[in-house]
Image 1 (tube, one colour):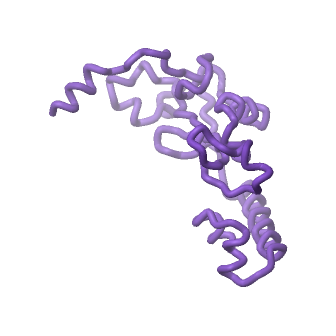
Image 2 (tube, helix red, strand yellow):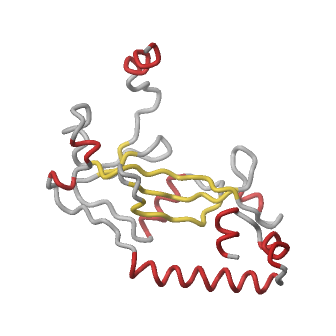
Length: 182
């Protein structure tokens, strides 16, 4: 039941129909499996901790590309918020409704250049701004080591920990035109 709900994005009602169980049973089983995963995560998941400026800790994607190294030497990866479609009660729907008109949950993700997720925080309404979700992630333990930073989109503020593009600037336009002509 847990895998069905988590992978397909099925609602409690959908799981009830599929497995022919009561709403209480579906909720209880989902919660038990989720709690078990949370307990196992502490034992089997290891969060990377880039604490030094050693070249061995620089991502190979950056180290081997002269366009990026040494400019992005202290960059740990990228952060962004992602909208995951959800089904909520009609009472809660307005706060989960996005600018595009569908109901979603805003999930904050920080990942390295090899696409390893370093931090994730879900649960925010789809209408929540990325910077609000980031502030909550920081309050809940997301840390950027001193001297390091993440790349982010324009939904975040420029700080020493987060490098965002300047508004209204078109980056690498010449390279894009050349690559499109090829």
